[in-house]
Structures are given as structure tokens and as C-alpha cells.
Length: 257
Image (cartoon, rainbow, N blue to C red; front, side, top):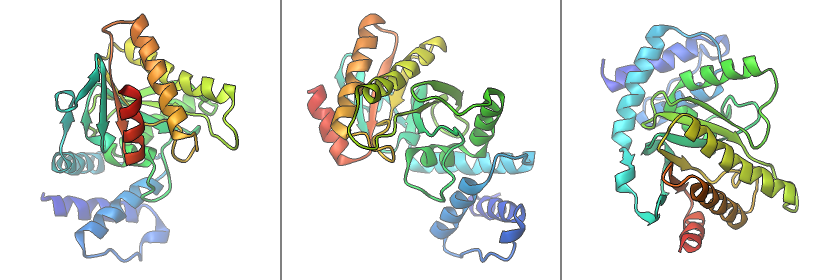
């Protein structure tokens, strides 16, 4: 099966699941079809799916992963011992774990093709990630608390695991509690990674997007928390600060000096 045939199969399968979409027009242009597939994956609730779908989805996403290009730790410049800075798509990183800035429902972003990192990670991993998150939340029975973390498999991502953490949402002035909760996000991920004997972890800029934590203050907290952890646990974990926006790159570059 070619990549185009896989794309067509996946779109038709997801449309067939929803009676409201059966008359939906499938675009001809490849990029529009790719965007449609991502949208259909984003809006799909966690429910049973056939093995055939998962197999073809995995083949498709593995090819997409190779096409995007995989970045290893050796490709990233070291800012200081055990700390790296990289600007780009976190779903390309081949490290032991990447960190997802999740929401309290912990099921990924349901907004079609939304620009948040939660959407990007779930889209690149495939629907298996949402299904695993759903199983975790069904067992937990309550929303994910702010500052804690969960670990899942990475599915079609080049990393081994995904760590999911819910950062504080800022509505006005940043409080001492907000700062403490953001620090706890980083600390809990580091501790969870150590528990699973991981050697490398890539952090996104937790809470700075849709959750409105000021970028520079968030970066200061992230760096200080990581440095404090590494000082107490020397040699345990190499940390990548992954940024996407130019402004965040400049902030981290200056702070890491």
C-alpha cells in the first residue's frame, strides 16, 4: 500500500464512523487531505478501533515521521553540562521522553488542527495515545491535578515515552502559588523520568501558550527547577529545553548564557 493509499483508507475509515460525515467531500490536493486526516483524528473520541486501522495508521505515521526528519540528542548544541536548547518541532526529537503540556482532561486537544503542543503530539503519535490516556483517566476517575505528571508510550513518535503534565492557568497577575505549581510540573516530570530510569527528557514551554504564563518568568522557573534537580541528582538526566517561537529561543539563550 502506498502512502497515498494509506491516507485515503484512514480518511474513509474515520468518516465512516460518523453518520454525520458520510456525505463529506474529500479534497483532492494532498496537503488538504493530510489536514483532513489530522482533523478527523483530533475530533475522534476514545473508542474501540480495528487492528487494521491501527496497523495502517502506524505505517502512515512512521513514513511521515521519517519525512519530517528525526533529531537526536547528538544533533543539539549543549548549553552547559546536561542542558541543551533546541528550537523546532518537539515531535521530531529522539530522546527518552518528551513532555506534553496537557489539560486536566488529559485526552489531547479535540480542536481540529489546533496549534497547541497537545494537538501536535497526539496527531503525530496516533489515536493509540488518546486511547491510553483515556484508560488512565477512567481508572483515576478525577481530572488530572495541576503540577502532577503521567507517563504513556510514545506510539509513532521517535521518542520512547510521553510525559503529560498540566500547568497552571494564568488569569491575571502571576501568584506565588502559580510559580510553585509550574515548578512542580518540571520537578514531577523529572522524578517520573528518573523512576523509569530514563536518561534524557525534552521539555516544552509549559503553560506559556493557551495557559498564558509569562514567557520569561516561565523560563526562569523551568531552568532553576531543572538545575536544582540536576544538582541534587548529578548525571541522572540530560535535559533539552525545546522551544518553538523565536521569542522563547532568545529568552532561553540569554538565561542559559
